[in-house]
Amino acid sequence: MSQAATSRESRRLVSTWLYVLAFMIWVMVGIGGYTRDSGSGLSIMVWDPIIGVLPPLSAAQWNKMFALYQSISQYQLLHQGMDLAGFKHLFWPEYFHRLWGRLMGVVLLVPLIGFAVTGRLEKRLIPWLGLLFVLGGLQGAIGWFMVASGFFPDSVAVEPWRLSLHFFGAMFLLGAVLWTAMTVETPAPTPQPGLLGFKRLAQLSFVLLLLAMFGGTFVSGIHGIDAFNVAQNIGTGMPPAGWPFSGIFTDTATIIFDHQLLAVIAALVILTLGVQTFRHEYPRPVQDGAALAAGLVILQFVLGVSALVSKMIDIGVIHQMNAVLLLGALLRLLHRLRGATA
Image (cartoon, rainbow, N blue to C red):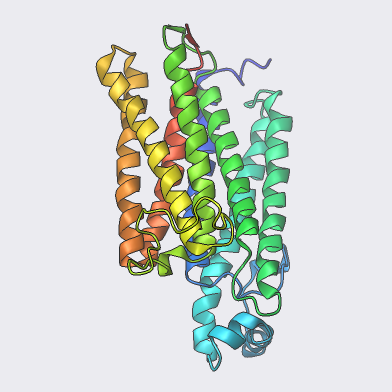
C-alpha cells in the first residue's frame, strides 16, 4: 500500500472529495423531486448524453423541442394550448436535472484519475470507485427508462415503480459514496463492547426507513400531495375501506396510508434510538449520531404532514431531501457502531 495513500493529508483529501460527491447526490434528489412534482420531467423527449449538454440555442431548435413535446399525451391532456414560454418553464428544471447528473460524473471521474495517478488513493478503492462511476452512468439510463414510461399513450406521468427504481439507484450510490468516505476518513472501527443490541436496533431503523421511503416514492409517483381529501378519507392516517387488500400499488388512499404507517413505525424505532442514548452512557459519537437521527425524524414527520395538508410542492421536496439526510445520519451512526460487540 502506498504511504502517500495512507497519509492523513491523503485521507482528508479523498474523504472530502467523496463527501462533496455525496452532497451533490443529495442536491440531485432535490432537483429530481422538484422536476417530478412540477411535471417537468417529460419536457425533454430525447436522451443525448453528449449533445444534450447544450440546451436549444436557436429559435429553430426550441421549436423542434416544443414540437416533440406536443406529440405526447401530457401536453395533449394537461397543457393543450401552452405556448413556447410555458414549455421553457417546464424545460429548464429537467435540463438542469440532467446537467447536474453529468457534472456529478465529472466530479467523480476526474479526481479519481488524478488521485490514482498521484498515488493518493488506495489501490483497492480504484476498481470500487470505477464501478460507482459505471453505476452512475447506468443511473442515467434508468432515468431515461423512467421518463420513457411517461410517453405511453394516455400517460401524463412516469410509472411509479420506475420512479422508485430510479430513486433507489440514487440511494445506493449515495450510501456507497458516504460509507466509502467515512471508511477512508476512519478506517479502523473503535471497539465498543455492550453495544451490539443498540447496533441491531440501528440496523432495524435503517431497514424501516428504507421501506418508508419506498412507500414515499409511490406517493410521489401518484401525486399524492394533490390527493389529500378529508371527506374521502385520503391521507388522514386512517386505513381505507378494505385495507390491507385495497390495492397496495393501485389505490391512492392505500398507497398514502401504507407510507404513513411505515413512516410512523420507522419514526418510533428511530426515536427509541435517541431515548436509549439518554438512558445509557454510550460513547459521545454514538450519542450524537442517535440524537441527530431522532431530531431529523421529528422534522421529517412535521414536513410530511405539512406537505400533505398544504399541498405545497416545495415542502414536499424538502420532505424528500430531509428523508435522505435522515438516511445519511443512520448510515453514519451504523459506521460508528462497526466495532460494537455483545
